[in-house]
Image (cartoon, rainbow over all chains, first blue to last red; front, top):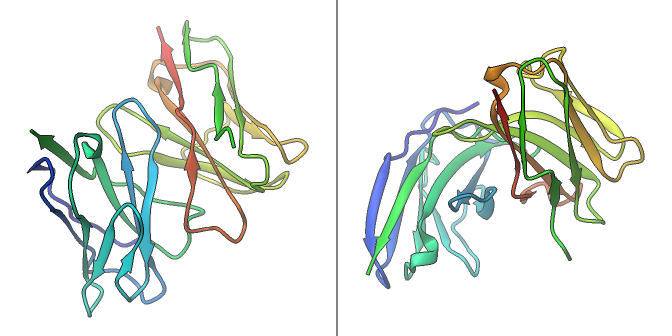
Length: 109
Length: 114
């Protein structure tokens, strides 16, 4: 499994954009980059995944570096409901995900 | 769509007792996963099923742990002779075979071993 490095914590103001970085320098060419988040007292929730091209969905955008050694999850307008732990997971398949300790995002008014 | 359902949500037991958790996946999902999460850590993969076949087991799944999915629908995770180190949140997730990019997690079953 590729090793990932994410900040332990980040803070954001509500309604501001948030950029959550992830380094995965040992990623293999066939690994997708998955992002999940976990709200307090809940199971993880899928956010987005991509392989090479940037991806957008209703929740977020995923920007993938050209060399694929890093990626950034972008929340366009953070809300209090976005306060969670965000996990970046490189994996060839979602059948066996290796979660790290993630980034704890705090959102303040 | 009622989502992934797990029962019981909380279980307190004494060391040495057996416990069983149940997971009901989203109805059309043929893949089912079990993860374990301890405080301050991310979830750790335990095992997964495709229909009734258990396709992979983690080394974390000791002989005291057994998971089944007898008819390819709900699944049970049994822990025999519980130890204090088994205290954790046990998470179940499901997905469609083709939807490998997205797992749907339940809210988990929290086990406390006294």
